[in-house]
Image: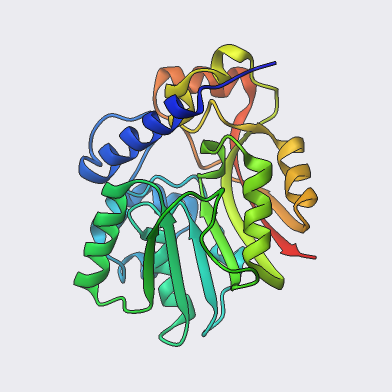
Length: 255
């Protein structure tokens, strides 16, 4: 059975995403920035209305706002909100009567997002430091949950999906993009903390991933691949080719 040092993974993930916040133009396994966001499906009109530094540090793997179908006045939770791009876009969708909450464990990301929120006057956004497998929110307190390239970084995916379902109102939905595999990863990759932080080592087989969502009390409505997403380092691309590591987006409704 594969084992992973969860403390080492957390340390690597925090370190990598601190660098994403401070030095988005540095060398990483994955692409970032506006060109990538537009290629994934983000509207240039939306991107023009959000803080540019949040786009520079955007390290998502897909686009799921059409799937989320946010409405004015809704309350939305972003799991692993990073430098805030998706919270800013969600803020535009739910309007001044809505509320967006972003939760992230990386202080540098939260500080950057909070500064951009204040500077841009996004008064309907709140940021919380915490872990997405232990959400500090009440049951049935959100209309929608979103997440972009984050569940693969969590060791307890099953428990995290159950937490997401817990905080959703009945009939609420989760819309996410994430990295999954078509072939089970071997121990050498699963136990590699650096590859976890690069969104590969913790990727779950797509069938098991979707089963975990259903087991959490969520009914998957639509799954779509994101072939426009790609890794950029040789090490990451090697694993991608060998184990069919790829991006998908989906929406699931709380039963």
